[in-house]
Image (cartoon, rainbow, N blue to C red):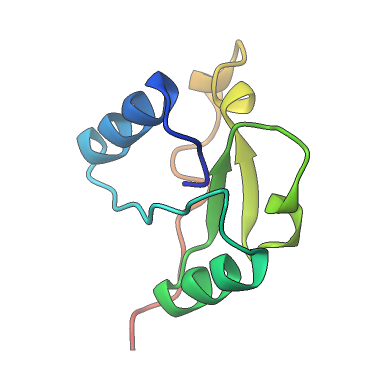
Length: 89
């Protein structure tokens, strides 16, 4: 999650935990290279962002904005399209 401290961050964290997922907190103020290294080491496949233009596009994985998750019809999407088929080594 590459989100600034906000109510949206708290909601996103709780949603991930309730869904049984795991999250990697990424500070938007850190350099993109450092965030990319953290994501690669953790095996993260997507990054949740607030949609502001910035360095999220340079990070590995698929960027997902809060607005994408809040669109009508989101509940009709296939279950867990972000799930990785990669196994931990």
